[in-house]
Length: 99
Image 1 (cartoon, rainbow, N blue to C red):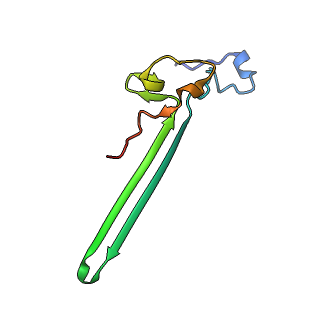
Image 2: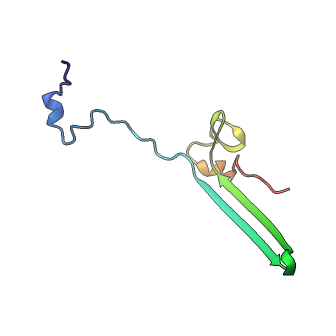
Image 3: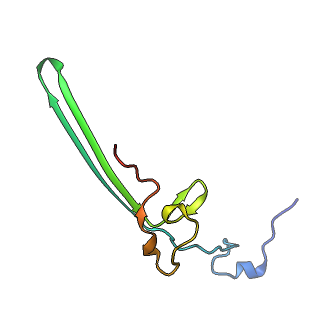
C-alpha cells in the first residue's frame, strides 16, 4: 500500500498544507468605463405602446488584452515610455462608437 509521506521540515512550517508559493504580478492596466442609458415608454389605450431606447458608452484604458495578447496604445506591443504609462491612455480596443 502506497501512503504519501510528508517531510518533518514541511510539518514544522506555519502552513504545512501549502507546499508551493507563486508570485503574483501587480496590475499592469487601468481602465474607466462610462455609460448612459435612456428608455422612454408611452402606453396608450387599446394596447398601443411605443418604446424608444438609447445607449451610449465610452471605454478608456492604458492597455487592452486582445487575441494576440496584451497591447498598448494603437495596438503596439511595446510602451512609448515604461516609466510613464499615462502616455498609453486612450480609447479602449473594446470601445464601440455609436453610428
